Length: 112
Image (cartoon, rainbow, N blue to C red; front, side, top):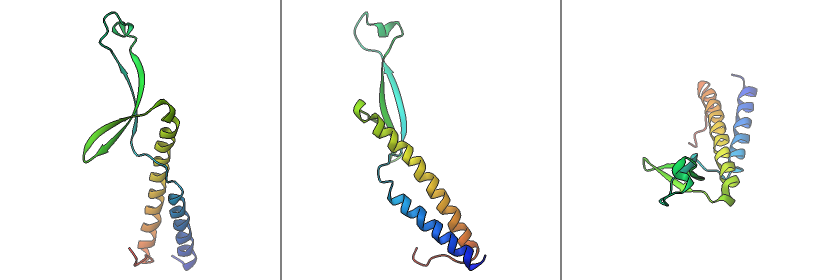
């Protein structure tokens, strides 16, 4: 791999790392919509028209799933954070590919 190609890879990686720093608002989890049936006798929810949807974000912490309620006024913000998490995953994959290319030619950083 030529020195020019290595330089290009290093520049690409630097740009991706900079982009990571600009994506501070992110949420890693899954969007969940839940419907419920109440305890009131004769409520329409007992005939199939359940209450909801109520929104939650499901996250995994210490190997266990936890669902956190999302208030209506925060729904767009939470969805944006979840979307940004996917962007971060894509960036990390690109950085991995670049680092693998750099490893192939021995052009890696010693400041791991």
